[in-house]
Amino acid sequence: MTREVTQVPHRNDDHRPATPWQRFAEAFRARRTRRLEHAPPTSDTGSPAPEAVPGANTLWRMRTTVQDEPGSLAALCGALAGQHVDILSLQTHPLAEGTVDEFLLRGPAALSASAITTAVESAGGTDTWIERADAHDLVDAPTRVLGLAARTALDSAELPLTLRQLLGRCTIRSQPAPVGGRAPGGLPVEGALDDTVMRLRAPEGGVITVERPYLAFTPTEFARARALVELDARLGPRLPHGRDVLTLAEGSDITVRRADTRDLEAARAMHERCSPRTLKLRYHGPVGDADRYLNHLLSPRYGRTLAVQTASGRVVGLGHLLWDGDETEVALLVEDAWQRRGVGAELLSRLVGMAVEAGCSSVYAVTQASNTGMVAAMRGLGLPLDYQVEEGTLVITARLGEAVVTSAEELGSASAS
Picture (tube, helix red, strand yellow):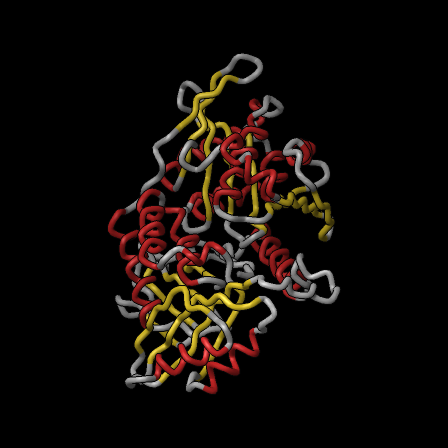
């Protein structure tokens, strides 16, 4: 199934005017998104499609709306059988008028999507949507939903990812609660569904907006998404408890663990110990604004954070994996006294491992050419790198291929960190 970049925009979490760093980040992402939207898929070489191999099959996901009356499903099945298409699974999504039938199909490789659509619509189907599927779609819906619920239960940061896997290609935006914690205006407690847009009450009081322009949501999907968000809210803030104690080359012991907004004071204290140059290289703006980013960066709604702490418990490094679709952003900050001791490289390798587990195809870092530590850490991954200059800012993108997937456990996983 073709995947599409899901954007979880970075927002100012206190409704104050955007800082220079935030304005830069939003502008950069907008340029990057426009560039991606107009680029062909990486698998599209512009060459004619290869001829189908005799006897080969193709998997399809298809939705079509039928009248809620006896015989309507039988007519669809007959039309598909006439095209030598097997039905591997079927889900029904009841509507106020009619029913959306969702199929997983297997048909001859030579049979096109348009031919299947024509056959289905001749049998009474309307508003038909179809796309290629893959082996992951063979998992039955109850098993998949239970797996997503288990992932959500273990980690607050999983909610945006599990919503995307539940609903397919979509754009997810998290809007923080207004200052003072007031409820979002005009949004009922149960949320709202409007065709291709659903809005849900976020556990911390904000709003989660999910958009899927190419395919309307059904009430069944809305109920599933709402149940997942309600599960997240009931469980409260939580992180995997694992932590690793490592010995640096010089002999010092450090602990690497997950972090969230409960580490806000420790992160602010680390900012106080960092030099203005270190903060400027990290945040690309006035160092006085650095503390304002922390609520956002540490929030599990926008990604995952790793913290490095000393034997005394002092946080001396932070690594962020910020959800930005397939091109997830990585960002590092290491206290001056602990730089060039392998802390940044350790954080980055673990963040990449987490990105692989999340299904990301690449990670990118927004930095400056003068930030030699970050440049060296990206090179140290041993992955193919792309370099781009955006208005004086260096963007380094690492492509995550099959070799990385097989070694994700070595790089470090979310549960082990």
